[in-house]
Amino acid sequence: MSGKTLTRMDLSEAVFREVGLSRNESAALVESVIQYMSDALVKGEQVKISSFGTFSVRSKAERLGRNPKTGEEVPISPRRVLSFRPSHLMKDRVSRGNLRDKA
Image (cartoon, rainbow, N blue to C red; front, side, top):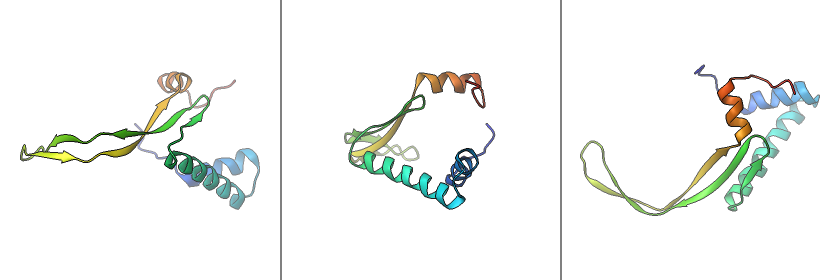
């Protein structure tokens, strides 16, 4: 793994280069998309991006966990967790290691 992390700034810069919006407009667009996705997830909706994957929120029930140091049993409270399922196209692309498809 390269250790590089894709950031909001990187996404904004890509929109700036690819679409031709100003840097401020590109940053606002990226923020707007992220906010829209976040709002949908908070409401319990799925966010499906074709050829990329699906984000969804799952409810996890209360369960008993164990402290690894002491072995003591500890209750883990119920919670909602974010999950991501990549599309088959994304899985295939990642496994091939292609940086960009030429299609």
